[in-house]
View (spheres, rainbow, N blue to C red):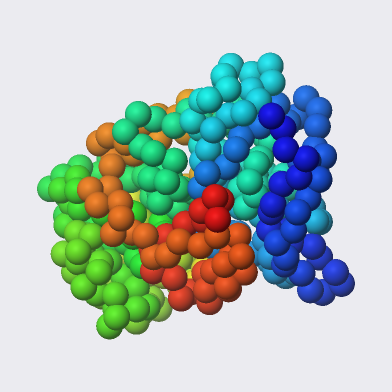
Length: 337
């Protein structure tokens, strides 16, 4: 039975500010029509850096106002429309325009195009899927890219993970370690998070200051590969210190969008810079990565990545923490609260 209203976190832009409030919205707020075919009762969502940016007037993420943020969700299909799904199917939705130009996961229900919907793979619950969420998917896709496009194999040498205490970085550390790679975790929180990163499988933890570019176009070869979640100078450092024919999978820009480097890592060492875009990842590859996240790319201890659980009322504070870089791991959003 369709409810008359739904509870949601709403971000509404007013001049140079964004007002955040939990509200009871009419069911019609979800929209209607051929572009919104599948209705999902949301069980869990997650807090991502991009969600935080969607609540800032200068974040350059939100493309509609008012907006229900939330770039990932997991739940149960209640109305499949004319899609291939059936009522009762457990599914995941993330990326595309979700939580950006289309109402997202910070609500009790979502209505989305069928082409955005991924069946929940066997071996993962909705909650476990959102422990991984967009961040975990990005990490797994990064590892996939390094191994397939970058040629990374066990025995090649250490892998650097930057921004290692974040959602993408922490999952990347755990997945790479489980696959037998020696992992060096780089973080601005080395003094407080070192033990936690080692518990995820890191063999070495270094401070952010150790991944600062020297200013030289090339430095001593150190890394077989890198999962870079930071961008900016940190990415420039990784490129200058990759081993010959190494690769970096880049997905973040918390350290800045500008990249100051030279062509020398590419033409003298043959390194590869692999862009990782989880938002527009084609559906066949998207579904394959989710199946692998329940299998050979599974995090051995998913609960170790959970930093916090909140309901809708706790979301404004959680979004502030992620924007301030104060998170460690994943914050889950329980839509039953």
